[in-house]
Image (cartoon, rainbow, N blue to C red):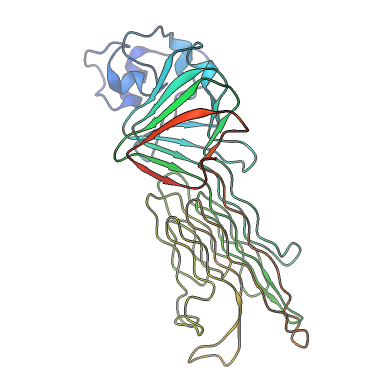
Length: 317
């Protein structure tokens, strides 16, 4: 549970939220306390900085942050091990770098996954960026074991005269698209899989049966479950693993059904959602596009320096 958003806040409360034991000695410069607000050792801090801060699933996390709110121009912003930087809006990056500075990533920066297509909007939604650079003079170092992940694109929905199968949500918490055969599966929260609807819970891209995308790293895509399992052609509508596009949707079959109508699978981290490229007019199955992949780093035309010994999924130019 996060700390309160106003009123009196004590060092003991902050210490407990950071992982310490109540009543034990603590100071603001301890790493478990500093990491709640991503401050470096010796940095200036006040108790009000900790309002609403906390861990999610045991991990330090910050949502949709702007670097100039933490450091001054020319400084260094270091993301500690065990942290998540995330976004819940495909139009807003998890980390906005708006001043000349050095970014050192020791953990995970992830974009928001695109939503799967639905009966009312068959195209999948685009994934969002992990990092957006709006300044010159920026250096980004992604250390070994760390991740910069664009959101996966949502899969296309299969629109039919007799019903629909929504597309899977993209990796990064994209919601599955609602259909008449399947309801919309929710995207996963920090470190969690999305909700499988006709498919396994996905750590990455959701399966094309309206399943939500996950926020796990590296994250596996969702596969269809009984009675929709093992469809032909192989891979139709499957959610994408990290860096892998969602499977194309369309007309398929398996041992239980002579005809199945699959939405496109949600894209894995930094990958596009699966589209539907065929039209079967007599059945009402219409072609639709999968959502575009979110960028790992969107420089917005600004030159920058990237040093990478970790993992990046999504474009960096």
